[in-house]
Length: 244
Image 1 (cartoon, rainbow, N blue to C red):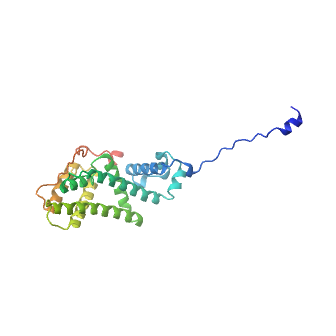
Image 2: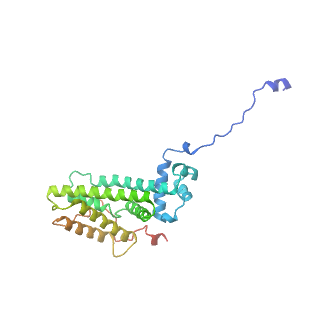
Image 3: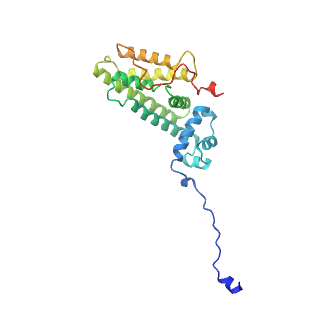
């Protein structure tokens, strides 16, 4: 080729790869991060998790994780809300059958306030981890307070329905609801710790008997709704002792 021909030939332009930014990542990356964070915290505790480890578990870059959540505290708050919102949808589904009376609905709801399946076991571990943070982190305290009040409001509503149906005696529905939710929270601590004296079966018996007595019900609450719970005689798989 002559010099003239070479001078008129089209220049060869090298292809420069376009750098991806966090905004270019798949839209479901945020949800994957939240689920991975929930699992990591339930398994290792708040003090044991690292942002890099959460990113790896979610299959995303650390840069993408920080793009969505600038600080660990911001991530923790969103994880707690995400977990509780997801669990609330399952709570409502458990009580959706219009044929259930107030006593059955209350039993179904309270059965979901204890670690009756593996997902609840994970979520309750998560909530207790965050609950322990509340005295030092006002934002987390606000979220856990909202969660407690949400449970109280739903239990109160069921109790009022039961009073109207005549299956519960006249009572302060909010007071009984707060007592019932607090009772579940206290029993959860022992179940999650693997206390052999506080199995799921024993927890259900205590809740069914104590709450029914507060409500003046003739019989204990039916705390074994259809499809509920693995065997409570088995030691929970996610206790800290089992993880060591």
